[in-house]
Amino acid sequence: MGLLWQVIAEALKENNTLCELRLGSNDISDDGAVAMAEALKSNTSLTLLEMGTNDVTSKGADSLATTLVDNNSTLEVLELQCNAVGDFGAQRLSEVLASNTTIKRLDLKQNGITDTGASALMEALKASEGPAYELDLSDNDLTSDMHTILDEESLPGLVHSSSEDDPFQDSDDQNGAGGLSGASGMDGEDFEEAFSPPDVDDLQASMSNPTTTVQRMLGLIEDQDDAAFDNANWYFSQHNSSYPEMAETMWTMAMESGEEPPMVRCIHIFDTVLTELAQNQPIHSIDDPSGLPSIVLFLFNHIPQITQILSKPPAERVTLNTTFGAVEERFGLLRMHTVDLLCSMLETRCVCICDAIAKSGALQIIFDKFFTYAWNSALHSKMLMMVEIILDAEDQQVTRLLSLQKCLLAPAPEGCGFLTRLMDAYDETTPDAVEVKELDTPAVENQDPPEVEAIIVEQKLVAASKNVGYMSAVMDMAGCFKKARQNVLALGELVDEVQQANTTNADENARWEIFCTEILERSDDVSPEKRCLGGERPRHNPTCGQM
Image 1: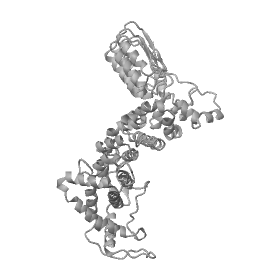
Image 2: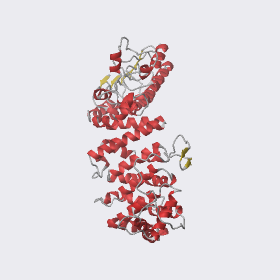
Image 3: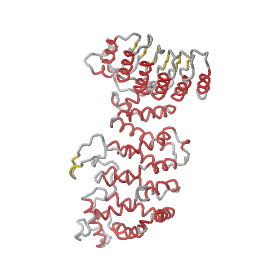
Image 4: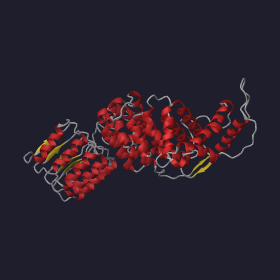
């Protein structure tokens, strides 16, 4: 409907004669609902407003509820059927029923409302002192128990029956002892067909109620065979116009749930969608956020909230026993998936995204956790991948990553203090002296044995690796920087700039040169065939660690 609903909303503010306004199936979405709510604050004539099938979510319902509770006393009928207001929207609209004395009809049919939202509406109706009302909760996601409760309350004007031709409506009835609601006379073949995993047509049909789809994706309601979760990327790819609303609904539901499993699913889905989209539609050349695809723009706008997740430890602080001993505090799957998502965002090499991540403080948090969780190989691997992206010597447009490079190299708290911490990690974890002994590996044909100094470095790293699990990643990151600085002139200039600005660490450049000569180059002298560090690159899909 585009700008038309804006014109209608503005006209409605001044109009005092129009009584009924029907805007069904016009792609109004939340923006239109918010505009209508604003108009209703001053309108005194409208008695009926119909906005069915308009992709209105909890955000739009919240705005309407606020107006109807505080600023409007003339509207009598509000029809929001076939939208996605969900439980939060239902709870907000229940406040309207409890306090507004003019509303007579509220249509919330097919809105992804579960028992939680229905309970709030029921209690509001019981407490209401308003006029006779009609409330339609048909075709929502209510269990058989809730239908029974609503029947027992015998509230006049309340409709809550489910569609008889929707075999997926009530997940509790599928497995309960009470049989199937509305499925009498169903034989075995019909039953098997009705409850088989949904095919593409079923998935597409379910988008008529995106709130329910999102709830299934997040595991908030039962999802047969995890079909919605497994096909989350399909939903987004097939419904580009629904990106912003669907993304906001998913994020809000997951974060407001207060539970880690829905949050993990949410972050994982966004990561999957972003990765596939970036592969098919490169966005590295986009400098202005307004030019980003909608799902990427959504993530860009939520970088501060994504960063906040990194600072919160797992909800369940369970001690983890490993071959290295007891780990008192786990890094957590939610934070690990969040690191994965941020790494995928860095891989876009999009200037505005990289700048936003650099300013968010996320990189400093992840680098600090890299050392804090000494045995989390998944975290170490991902941090190494981030460093490789930021210092990519092959990137012809290296300036796109300049803000991240500054953040990585600058001293804490403005930056990560990258070089200092790598060198400190080596100094603090390796012993001052080791016994020089031959490596227990066979000689390599046509290759000279390593020098004694190289063997000493190698055996120091072996000793360090018995105390911490990140030494191979530390050495790889140091080597990555060494190579990048040699190949990219701008990076060397950046290092000089950072060091000149940090007068307290003016000797770090000299320290780094010594580290390169005495540690990195000597470590390189020990060929992979002769290494005993176990120091090859960390696996990208490790199976152990502080998860």
